Length: 259
Length: 190
Image (cartoon, rainbow over all chains, first blue to last red; front, side, top):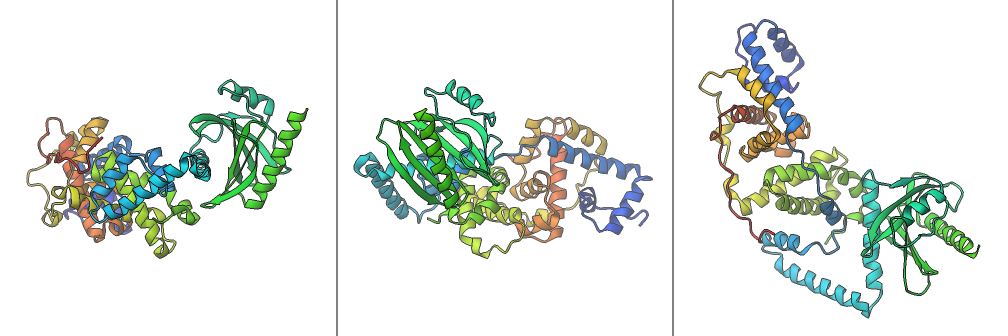
């Protein structure tokens, strides 16, 4: 192949290592003696390095991630408006959707209290998923409740009950501050087998409420209220194990308060 | 509306590739809001087609849907972006002799802003293969599948894309590339 012209296409493929091996080696061999070819390859490699180093990689915004995970939940209005704008067949659905949304708002306004739990469950699952996606599982990593409790208390306007892992086999990993129900709340993080259990705890003025188990999208949720604190547990662990965990946690919490 | 998390497999397989999906959509639409809309729509479609997913590589599969959705969006909103490249695909080497040394230097010295501008100004068919190759590190075969062209065409377009970029990065080489059309999108920007 000496003297044979190498096209720009072939050089591109060569730089990408996409030529057949034989051809790849032939060009490689020719580089040693052909200065012009060397310059051309060097220019292509310079460009490739510059692109890989400095071209922007656009990372998906958190809001988009949440929007897709919870496609059933109402998205920000501007997003929807634009979304419908280029789908002429959608206005009919949009009207129906808005009506449903309006209805859910009406329900939310204490006509039917379960609307709020539903919304809160979405929030809790979203928060759980986000923390598991990212690197921010815990803000304070410690298996010692006496380290975590003061850390959380100093960042919140209340002091959350912090309980060590209440069942054998589970580990207390630490805590973080999350935002739920329009306020900062304490998230206590436990690990049982390979599953993360998030326990969100925040004060409520409402009455005590018995534990309720919910499930959605493969996540299990248990929530209850006791002694002026709401507890929401969420995990992808199975329903029975989460229920057992919740039961033990409520017991441990009650025992701690009794002391 | 289909509910994604009724398919835990869908979530486990595709959510890890959301950044890749967004990056492609963002480079194709060149706009944050439009890219978000495209990715959301693409994910809805992906859920719908999920039954036809046969355990192949998840990332190219999702990117193929994103690309298809983005093209639909461009067709509706910026048809000017979608000029046919059939002629360009076969385009020969540049007529003038090229000095490769200054190009290597220029590329190595180019700053972020200049590089991003130059990529954004590429015709969309060149831009997508370049993004898939350099930012997603996909093979020609995978790119060919996503873009739905033969591997040889991927090779030609990449080659052309790089040649255009090399020229755009040369100092003082501004107006070689097409201007980005500034047509307002529908629906009112925020």
